[in-house]
Image (cartoon, rainbow over all chains, first blue to last red; front, side, top):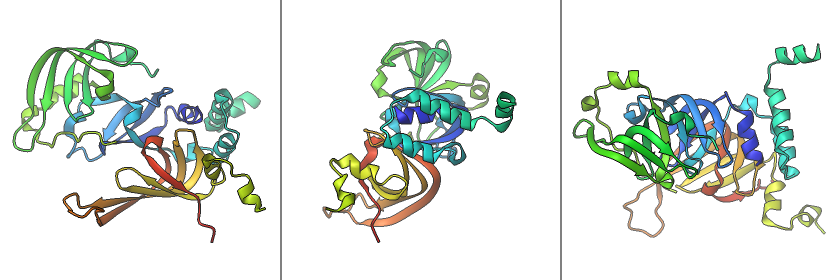
Length: 115
Length: 95
Length: 96
C-alpha cells in the first residue's frame, strides 16, 4: 500500500520503467493501480534503434508484474517521510498521499492557500 | 485498476510474455485484462528481412500473457515503412 | 543483552533496522544493487537512493556448474524502485 501511495504522488512526473525483458521506457506517469500496473504518456524507448517495435506508440499500459525497476525523480521523493511511514508499517494511504502531494505542489500554490 | 477503457476502439500494440508483438483494434477487455482485438496481425521482426505481418483476424489474448499495451499513433504509424525495419524480436520476459 | 539484537524478532526487523542505511541487494538475473534504503513493503518492494547497480555478465555456455562472470557492467541511479519479486537477499550494512 505504501509503495502504491508513493507512485500515486509521482503522477505527472517523468519516470523510467525497466522491464524484465530489458526494455527501458521513459515517460510521464499517468496512473498506477494496486498491482502497480503503470500507465505512461509521451513515451520514449531507450535504444530505439535496437527496439523499433514501439516507434508509433505514444502512451502505454505496463503490467506491474513485468517491471524490474522504476527510476524515480529524486527531488519528488521525501525520503524521511518514507522511512517514517515504513517504520510505522503505514497503511493509511491517505495521509501519505496528502502529505507527499502537498510537498510536491509548488510554492506558488501554497502561498495562495496560506496567504 | 489503471483502466484500459481509454484503449477501446483504438489501434493498439500488445507485447506478450514471449516477446511477440500483435497489433489490432481493441474490441474489448475484462477485469483480468483479457483483450479482444479485431483485424489483428502479428508483427514478426528479424534481422534478415523487413517486418512480416501475419493476419490473425479476431483474436482473444489472455491477460496473463500481456506485458504491455500501447496506443498506436496513426500518423506516425503511416509514416513508417515496416518493410525497411530490421530488428531482433523483443526478448521474452525472464523472471 | 545486545540492545541492537533484542529488537530483532523476525526477518523483516533486520530490514527495518537498515532504513536510511546503505544496503546490498542481490537480485535475479545476475544483478546486484547497493543503495540507501528508504522504504520497503511485505513483497520486498524497495525504494533506494544513490544506487549503484552491477550486472554480472556470465558465460551461459560455460560447462562448469557455477558460471564465472566474464564481465561486469555498472551504472548509477538517483532514486530507484525495485520490484520485490526480483529480490533474492537484502543485506544490512556491514558494521565497520
